[in-house]
Length: 107
Image 1 (tube, rainbow, N blue to C red):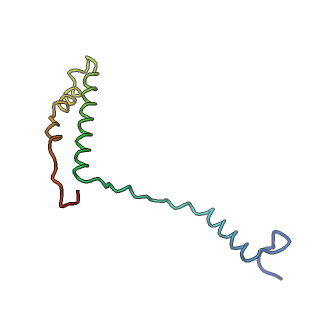
Image 2: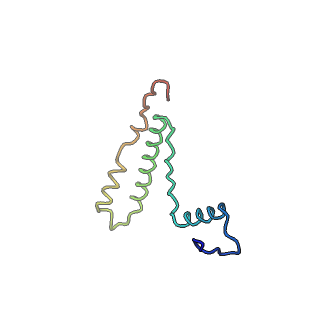
Image 3: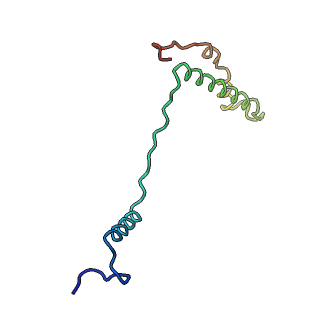
């Protein structure tokens, strides 16, 4: 009496066909591995990063000034209005005037 399952077709599967079915079955059972990607390295120099940060702060300060001007009368004396006014009053021009030192020929 032969062992094993009876063939589904007229002939038994070859070893390659059996292996292909096994691999397909295993792949269907396993979840796909999560591919982790590293964030891109920041290749800007320190002086360039400084200039970009100061420019971002100045842009944010301008946005907050626009928000403060658009506040309704009922919120003019609120904590939100005070916080916006403090941000607007910051003197960021001194930051913009600073030129960071260049470092050892790498910048």
